[in-house]
Image (cartoon, rainbow, N blue to C red; front, side, top):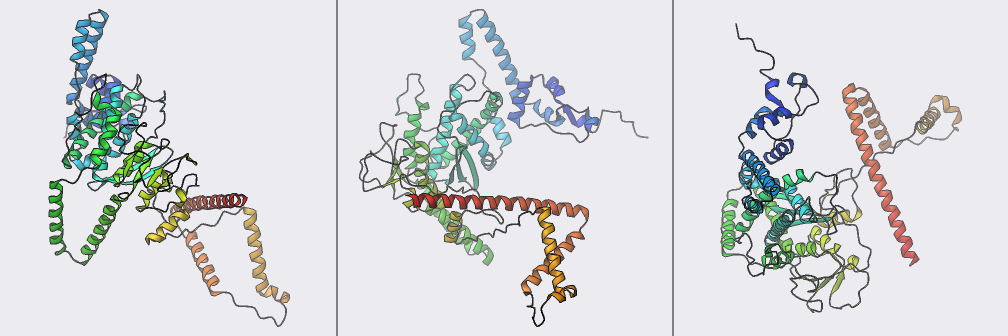
Length: 556
């Protein structure tokens, strides 16, 4: 006879542990426990049967995760930091400034390198988690320096973000851009991985008081370590020195010359105009020879797929030099940093007024300028040898992968809609006319928008049924007396008969459905009806806008 198992010693009761029990086991406070879980990627779980575990109203974790945290080296660093804070407070309370200064110089550091290597075993795994990382780092790079967000944190985020932007400019990895209310969305492609992040607009940022910045700073601590590793790997892949050499720039009064924004901006032109190294040229030749050998062993389907991939790569390569023959000058009122970034990513040359910021290479009166980016309807002085365009032209050209006509983007003109390149046209969704024209030019298939009929009220349905009944009676024997003699009835259209027959078969099929499938079908039709209603509203709104534009044009 087997040994009797006692309650609470096996099964779900042992597999899960409550948060309070985990705090006692690890001997941590709640903020430190949250910080450790964020760094290690440990999240609470929901047991299937809470009564077997210990009751509802508690937060549970897997026991094996807590045992995994018990052997973390960061745990010892946290305890050492508590001892350091206690000694520092004691020295400050005794006014022992010498002891306090000595303790401050020996503040314990908490390295997170091993956690990054543990959570991201390969470089591709790190690239797949770059979306949130970049969005967080670029957000803190624009925040004001205050008590909750220290100056060192903002400067570190600024340095890492600028280094990543320099790599994108040097390697021409930018693919799509979009301006929204939240900020500017960028999309790059690195080693086959698509990375999308958002950068806030360059306005005065206000830090809200209802946000727990301790949790955000914990995520930021992990993300800055991760981005430092990635920047190092990306720079060395282009045979560039990391961190960038900034010895030619003099230090500031506070001794942090490498942290200046002017230094970051002036470095952009150096990295963006670097020629290809001999190693890159040799690797390109080897790849081409290898591709020729592989093509000889492929069948027809694989060859067609490879040709399509090669054609797409050629289009991307062609788009990299989109602005190679353009020379831009930026006005004072336009956002300089995003425009400089995207123009240099696509091979363009750009400058600005030397009184606005450092790093300008030519002035406004340069005769070689072809495009002047402004955001004012009227200019005091104009040069006839250049176009005065609004900033949206640059963004739309990148998304269209070609230089668009400048007629609709001139200074003071009503701009066309700025369409998002991240939205793909699907069947049953609203497609703007501008996108339809672009798809027709590129030869893409345009999905058909089938609008569901609008919902009718019960009164309207009853009236239509009554009309149908009267028509059937007229065509039946009861209504033969009302039909004039000698009049030959026209046969019904065969298309209408087929349509009626299909509708009747559909109705009978719905009636024969089981109750469960009928509910599912009703939900599908309800979502389709909702989508078609939204499409109909958008089309009506577009018609109203077109009518208003026509009235304004007539008034002028």
